Amino acid sequence: MESSYWIANGLGRHTLVWNVFPSGITVRVPWVPSSLLTLIIFTVISRHLLGTGRGDEARKVIAELNGVTEDNALVIEIVEELDFAIRAENEGGKATWLECFSTRNALWRRTTNGMMLQFIQQLNGQNFYCTTLHAD
Image (cartoon, rainbow, N blue to C red; front, top):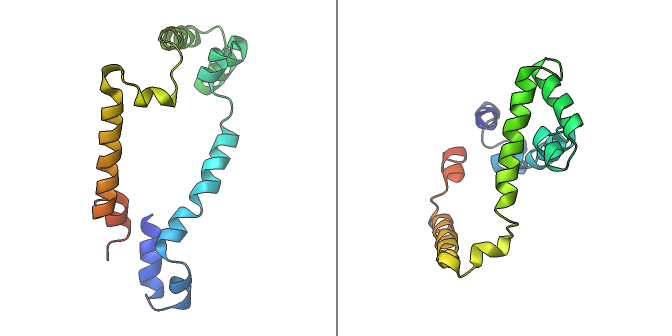
């Protein structure tokens, strides 16, 4: 991210390139394709495989990532930990985004306060990224 700042200084602030491609765009445009590419590359996630009942594939992935065989103690330990965590999460029930606005424990108030706080920070310009990336 700092590279766009140094390129801008190297090219000068009044060149055609800098006026056409301001730093905000040069930082944001590659972000979406790189995020999508990351999702495509890392589709095999052991936690997801275990959660969907594909334990054999998950053990294979964990073994490959750690450079050991599938029957290694490390793989067995990791699988047991992930199984325990997945079971604990599933026992809590299915949560949806609507739960953020439920009346139970006044969750709607907390959600609204957080949303308003972020909105007001953005409105006042108290944005970390804007102040650091675009500071002149």
